Image 1 (cartoon, rainbow, N blue to C red):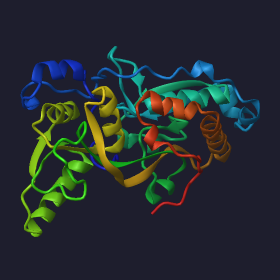
Image 2: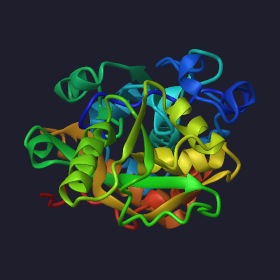
Image 3: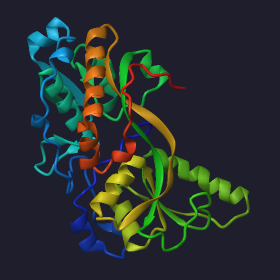
Length: 307
């Protein structure tokens, strides 16, 4: 969840594993914010037909422009990140934005932006913001938001949970996290809880790269990986099932598409488009392409009540 500096994209894990199997990956392998990694194939929105009824809901200025401009911050695999060609923005958020455009009969233009600059530019520079935006009361005061994904935090272990890790008690284990994330901060709290309870200490393993976190779980240095739920789901796919999610997602929240407060017609059209994609199964196909079907919602709500 984007509450601290965002996660970098996963790198080409197959190459990383070959170089660092069963070793500490922090000394060489890593990722930059533009490393796309061995991503899944993107969903092809050309299979989605325009819905004339929903398209008729669009405001005249958007119809005349013929294009939806979308702001995103491409450093958050698998939602949005730079692909293997080093320039194309890919991910399930991007595929969803293009699918929305197809339903509305519009082209989609995606712009990479600083994360904090996206919401202030909605309605002027961008028609929509699609960038792993958690729906919060503070954001709803600034923009309208259409819910489309539920994400949280999750643990992962080696396939089959060979160390028989109990997700309700991780004291005494080595836990790997990416620095600068929500989980990095939360790990300090877990460590303090174990100490206060008089239990065995957690061994923290902190890496600048999520690829290193995943590699060290696969290699056996870490007992547990702690990351955003969608990152865990994608890592399971990228490692061909060498790891698995442990227990349920926790501290979950809704992600939403941001739209201008003074453009109710566009917000309602986007909500209807997302709901159609959900009902027709295209939405599920997009999330499944990126290994994140577990984050699916059944209803696209406009400005849902959140705490």
